Image (cartoon, rainbow, N blue to C red; front, side, top):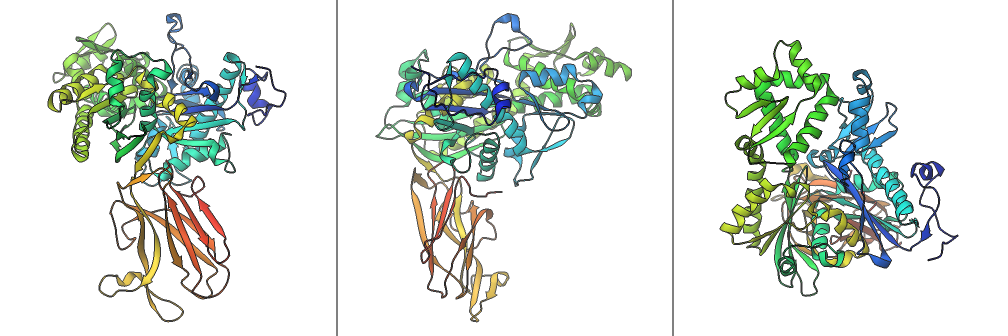
Length: 603
């Protein structure tokens, strides 16, 4: 293919091109899709070109701690390091190494080191534009800025890899960016990701269609369905093919480091997937095991001791939990799991007149040993660390299966799904009790990001979704003394008694909504001289509330309504079938339109 001289660089400036590591433009291979998966513990990207969409390239790197192994990693730790002035320094292994091994204690107190920051968007009940996330040393940074730095890193990495490996150019006009998010996230979290992507130079508000938000379980479903096309071999191909036959129903559990994201799909007659129940889940990821490990350390060495060590040695603490224990828990033997302590922990305990060996020998309630500088956790004790999170996952899967009236298969994807302990527990619970086949596809940790690439090429593979909440707007209606509280009463300019807090619903929770489906309602202005209408958008877990008191306002639109008289009408239209809720209001008289969707303000 000839090199085009009309390539539009995707870099915003020469600095971006320089930092990409390969500034010479490549050839034009046409439209491409780049998907980025920011996970709680590990992150990565994948891409493919439209001309051969199933030839998906996933990023490849090495662990600096094991360069001699020759093993290539397709994801890097979700660790971000910013300089004291807030500018970018590094991401992934390099961020971890620099913070923990090159900065001294005083420097660590002034830099910004972030890990597992994705959980902020899950645990924070009310997100705003000012929502911050704490670095390892407690310093705060706007969460959108943190995500923007992470996304920009992967944007540059994908551009550099494209040029180095494919000698190809990603043109801004032909590149679709896909950002994956948990299906259980609300509009506010999705908006932060979209705005962070814009800030990172991925598309813009003027071209929102070039940036897609993909739901992680859906992306994983597309990956599993496309295994043969992608060229991934699976020991039991007939099993995975039967799971995606027309009429089949499967539960897919995306089990990552932070959350369990669970959905149920039915394969429609067209071969497309329809959601059978709105997405559910919780904070039952692999990091839950880390919390149990920290609790174990607190029991053995004392909670005050562990908390003080974390404060005084933040870098080594991160090294202990996020690196050493994270590595150890992936290799579970039938005997013991070994975790090596940092040198500073020995020195820290020595100052207190004790040692690791003494503390472990005194911990009579735990099956632990001190072996050649490492904490040896017996297999039975290891099972105890995993038990709380596995119990939560199993309990929730049983609940979902009951709610949907049964499924034919369970598919496990995500980094935590590679755990042999987790797989054994799920198989034990469901293959025996429910007679279900449990499927763990090859490269399950890449299922989301590779499936997101295919989703970017063809979003129509999803036929219908279920509403995560009930959605509606707030309107004025005649006041009813029997049903409306006095707190909602107001008297308009003509002396009429009105209720200002009435809820007008558009869709109810768990209602099936086909992709592209729109719901339109017509309303009228409240006053003769009203020149604008403020339209608050609400969500609620209730099917059809009368008032908005117990609903959450998630967004708003303001529409100009020129003219005079109460006969002026406007329509409000909502689209629910996409991954983001879209709202549009139109003044019928002037045809003035106010749209919200990718630009709808949920914060």
